[in-house]
Length: 456
Image 1 (cartoon, helix red, strand yellow):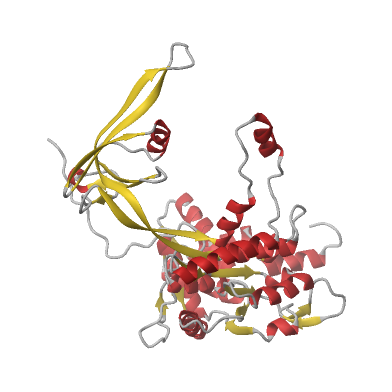
Image 2 (cartoon, rainbow, N blue to C red; image 1 turned 90 degrees about the horizontal axis):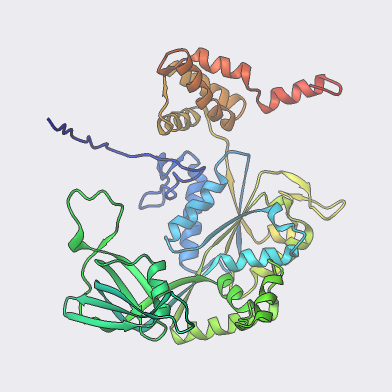
């Protein structure tokens, strides 16, 4: 007898594949007030409400020439707030996260690396009216011919493709070079595609919904049969960043001869893009914007550990913020008053020069209280599929508030393994205490080092 069992629907599905994949917004209500637990956040109500105001400023285009500083201790949600701001702005807004130390490289100047990331965080939405053939593939036949160079092999002379739309069918004879693009896109009979008439570019939109079945196990996107004629004019929207345009124009298009190909191979991997080239790209972008072809989408550049930048980077950052085309810059620092890198005696708040601090809207993130830590640990245990009892949860929350939240969270998985080893499905306080003996926190490690003269 065939076994059939019902799949029970779960009310809410929580998943976490990386540090901040659970963040899906700032978790504010319609009046801009922070909900206690929402959007992947717990607590930090004031910081989230401040970021909500900043999102409104950005939407009303009132943030030009300014930047935001998220200041607070480690593990207080600074990176999560920056990510939430970018998500509140919309799904197509570029988000470019970097760490201050990333800019220091032996290959590229630090100011060049900073400007490169600036350009990565600025998007351009290009709208073009193109002549296209769009429809469901009903026939796909490559026609072969004898190889003109001799030998036993055969070559593709042309490809016959039949496309069907709601209003009719067309059969196209395509160039053999387009067959490679068809193979690359993995096009088969039943797929909905469009072919650009001028360039021959092919884009697979999805599988025709006529092929969808109730019990389909494939993770396939089904699309309806295109309306109108097969041959038509269509608005194509492309999202690129200014860095993509810089790179496309920086690479010279060499010929097909041996010397050109060798030159391409021998070129260094990382090349600097000149200011002159960027100015030319900016001119073309401005022209497209004035003609209504393109729309500028300022994204978010997030620089974590901003105190790692030196005085030259800060001076360059000041100038970059004043440029006509600039993204929203969010800085994060967990330092108090400290020496600015690259200087001997200049002490400044957060390690940032005073002239740049004047430009910043500073948002403070506060340490979590015990109740918030307990909520965070409980949610994390649920996501990781760990069963923890109330006493053990209180114990981990106490450790988190006494030592650090990150240390408390890191004890969960080892405690789960110890409980499984003991033949239990539930984590008990003794599992947490055993983990405390096995794994040191930062404070205890420092104390041991201070007591010993040279070795652990």
